[in-house]
Image (cartoon, rainbow, N blue to C red; front, side):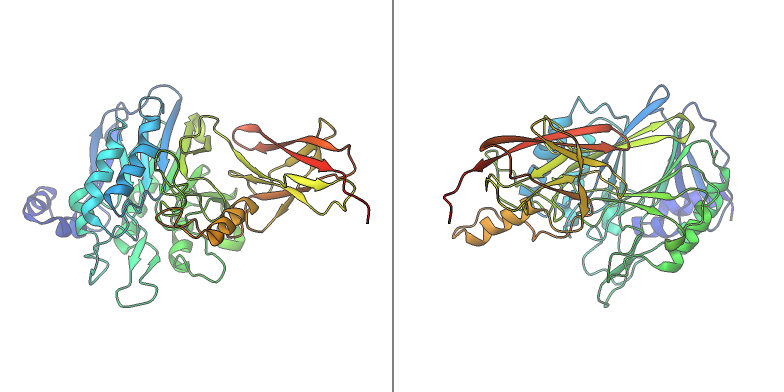
Length: 451
């Protein structure tokens, strides 16, 4: 079918029809050459000119996971907790939201879009499972509201340093439990099969979507066949980063043969923490903003992707409204008996920690000692859970989530044979992207009467 006839048909179609039949828009930033349209039919590409979003050989991209607002109050939290504190200072030239802009309230989509637009940079929104139209009878008809308020659910942007694909990876399953699963549609695979071979392999390739590619224990999060098919398309690319959200926790997964990836190097999937944290829950601060700590103990916030020439990149997590940009959360007892068996520890939640992160601690400036990676809940959030349990009044609209095992928690045993009094604990972690990060806390040793 001729391209002009397709364009005429699309002009007469409604938003849902456009989603089903339109060629995938690919925005090509100046001064990159604008390619010719990639034919008609399944997977066709509509190349469009876009102004250059950044200058130089480094570009910064803001990344938001799950704003997930369900009310005007939540929109206000999102605006005051995430957006306004970085307005005019973020230094990014592009932004991405990884789905779940809203919490099953499509009427709020324009407000979330407007809040992010106030940051003054081009913004790319992926849809999430809570952005679908309530009561949608099919996957094909599930994003009509998103298309009207936000735009296409699948598109791409080509920049001087990176090629970015935004993909709707939510497959709605009406009438089933669960009511959705992660995966890709045939038209999306057709697009990727056309688009990917046109890309230079010396640039970073970023895939941004909502549902993570990895499966959590006991859960089938993403269709295995779709993951394998996607990995096969990505295999020729030496520089790939997958950005996902959905879990309301934070972790890094490096895919290898065990998960179906057969590229030359492990495939990095950064499962980004949520802007809303644990759904805007927890006790509110003096400004009325909930603590929003996630179930793995990570504070809510946003990520920053720094893209460099030659396919190199770095990622960083920034806690909401934290002027100290703390990267490690510490928990330790305030008081121990001097001489007690050293069975109590200092715990370090290294928010950007990976399995191979080196984490060490020392007391009173002594020798650095290794900390042991543990898979258990963050004691700081367990303590918050205990306060909520004991409280006879509501401490927030919703209480903090029950603490779950964190994938980035380390423990070190505190010495008890030191002098009585206060002791300084220092922890350092070696972030693979930002280098050495430190945090400090104290504990006291006190003599107890003999028994």
